[in-house]
Image (cartoon, rainbow, N blue to C red):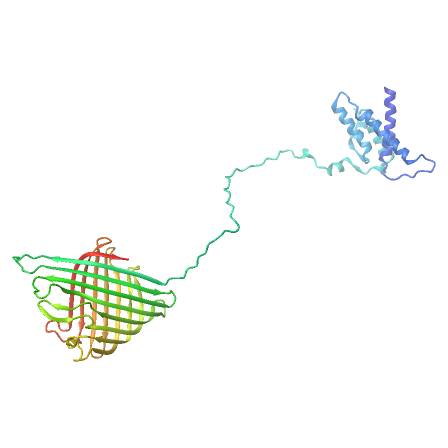
Length: 425
């Protein structure tokens, strides 16, 4: 065994010297061919693998170290510090591979390409990381996934023609009954009365420049009393009035306006126990056309609304179909028409005094150089619920174009109170 080991050792030393040479070596013509040398080199490596590197020994560490040191002979020549330490220390151990490497260091230093320290610097050592890497993982709530929205969705678009018209109305039917016995200590008489009212409005506003307002007012009231032996019923309220106003916006609140007002009544009007007719349909008929400006009112947090109409130029026509009423109406005898020019103003306001109490007022004035008309209508409405309400109507009037009364002069006054049905839309 000892003899075989020495033979193998000399073979390894010869092969190691050949493996460390990297530069091409000149070959004489009388040498054996290059292929034979290459084949001999391959056979030597296979023999070394079978006899030494793959041979198993009892100790795994010794086998691994032996293989690692043997591989140095077949790698580029590198200077290893442990080679000199193993050979020149006092506790040295015989290692044929280290001896061969030391022989090469001494005889052929030109073949040494580097040191083991340079090789270690070019490598990444896993054992350099002494402290294990610890990752701090923070748990968060899973965010709800957003629903996938379609790229395109069908949309149906319907273009409608804008409607600039608004319609509204107010209906009311009021009743009043009064009974007095024949022996009542203060006297008086029993009577019944009823009042029907209809107000309809149709307004146009294109939200830009043009505004057209139309209002039709119809009122009719009846009364019966035992003291009147000529008439079973007499009218207490009789009105047909149309107001139309066309405006062109000047500023936010002001409009250039043309206003038309026409009014008459439904039936004949009488006094108690008097057969004389005091007024009738188209007797009189008043038509008023004016040019001026309007101011829109929206005050007290939208609780007070309405408008002011101021017209420095106005035309008024009064007509009567009954010539016997001309003197009473302030017209010339035998003439059906009265034409005059002047100035006019109209104030229409509605004020919600409380949740259930409303005050509507209309102040109308017309003046010429010869006569003046002034009317002030006030209606206080108290709503008990949506359908039941009570009304108080106060109506003072001034007209110096008629005959003067000895007691009231040119003033006229009308008032009534009622309770009944009322509906608005």
